[in-house]
Image (cartoon, rainbow, N blue to C red; front, side):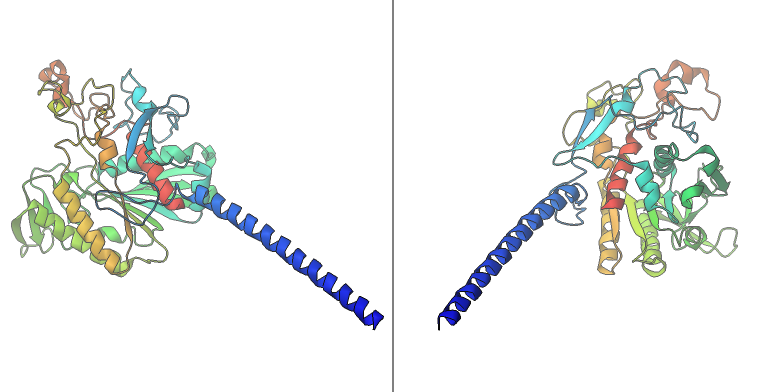
Length: 407
């Protein structure tokens, strides 16, 4: 009996030790799990993105599009205008005489978090064997130039190239088998403004139901970034049913918003049918604001962005150069696509760009035609208050795009 008693005590002791060991292991597991969960939340909270003003993709703790510009001359600009091999003369403000370069030193700071630091090597790694394609007008081309400037410095000279094939311009990073491309389609659908060089025509015509001519060049892209606003900004648009040059074509002038809606329907139908929804990331860049009327920020009415050197600081400032009705048309098209399983994210760059009245080229760009004497005497008359100097505002757009790509 004694032996059985001692054996029972021994077994009971082992059980207690075993239970204690299990308790310790469970406690360690819980602590590690909590740490990892906390760490993960900290790592990803900057990358889970939602927007206000109706463009909401998910619940999150941070709205990357609500914030302010912070002067930062220690880490910005992210690249040098002179060192970017593929800088555009339309955007190279320093090259064409701009002396005040503070427009290069502003960093976009969201209210509730920080934008992830742009890492060119990481982005090229993500793009290995893939195509990132920007489709749209000259503002989208400016964002494409910005993206090329942001990444090309980490690519050795023999391993990078630029090729133009009609409306398609391709930057290639050979080592990564990656391309960053721009396709000229200012109205997204077919138009008489599709020539990448000779497109400034007084009578603008669109084939609102035809997009295949363009889309075949970017059907298999892995990331597509669209925009289209500026070229629609007129009271009416002439819409063509039929083909250009056909004697049987029918033309009709249609109110701009309706023709824009028709074009976006054609675009969205194409996305629904032809895009691989499990492979391709889709983005639409919201309207890029203009700064043509200085009275909007309290200056003399005859002025514009010329001679401006500082951003607007009024919270929520919105000028006349943006059209909320057009942006609502885009939102409606994208909401309808979501019901069909197609997820297009809006890069809501409008509000953050509204503040940057000093970020435009103004007179500091290549002039494609000789200036008249009257223009020279009145620089505001030929100031470019549409496009953006680089380095500058479009770099922030690409930082937002980078955050989305890695989220």
